[in-house]
Image (cartoon, rainbow, N blue to C red; front, side, top):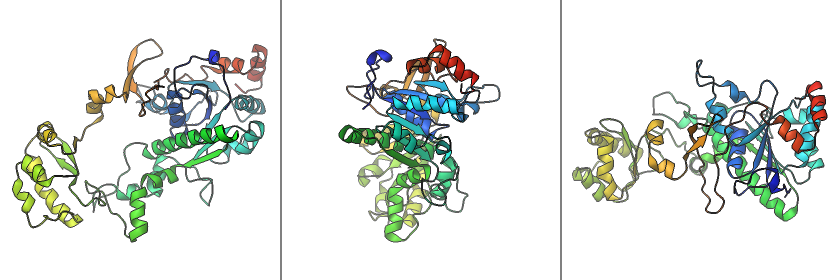
Length: 405
């Protein structure tokens, strides 16, 4: 593994301290993967096109508030280097940067980095230890490999959207960039596995992750059902058609509640005040078919609608049943559980104010993660990074003249 002296940058105690990541990414898939590595302690240098930057910078909260939630959410703790990879001088800087790096992450349209002379073969020729993570929409091989795409492409093409909603109604996308998010996690997994392999062999490798493949993997159980039975698993219908039990969401008088499988049916039906449903001949079998589930849900809709969500949570909590209120973002942020575990955290913004940010989904007992510094301004660390890798101020002036910065 390439060694970077601790004096070069602050040691935040993270598991990946000493690992340098160069990210040439945009929007979510590549940047969010690099952001999680940064939380784990890696030094992440984000390479962005001068005067333009990552496309996510141009997705404002509103016409009045030009801040970008996408950029802020996926780029904390990084350093921004404004560098035009399309010109030879910029390409040479990137090669110098990679010479001393451990991981490269890119999710440009396939062929883009290769067209700039910065593909895996070139980079590994200079630095055989480099781990080169390439994120794409549809995978590196096959007739669609060169197609551009984004989150919705994968939700649609991988079958996710076909299973949302209810029978007879229009399908709907998942209301988050779920394909990008899952792919970013797979990039992280691939990068870490490649670093472990490199510790044994001394060589890096190319890691390929796609939105399409990540969405298929996210539905491994559902696809296995189809591959084994030849039957399509069907729409969600407020539940999961592969789970033949009391598993779904129900309307309350002021919202919704999720019942997440019932292990003790007598206890459950007694707790909700309707023990007679336990012996109802229409759905008394342990395994509920979709038809029986629809009948039972109709009865439970009337039961749960009589009280508030919080009332039902208070009723079910002592029984040990698995349940959860269906919450909006404001309610999730107000839940102390999400703060105690670090899923949200307080951080300091670029003007010294305390702000709430998304934390880390992973906890470490010995090498804690860090929410890091605010997402950088475009090119904020250009001179710092160039000086760090051996360029002089005269060199930096020449790079500006050449249009690389």
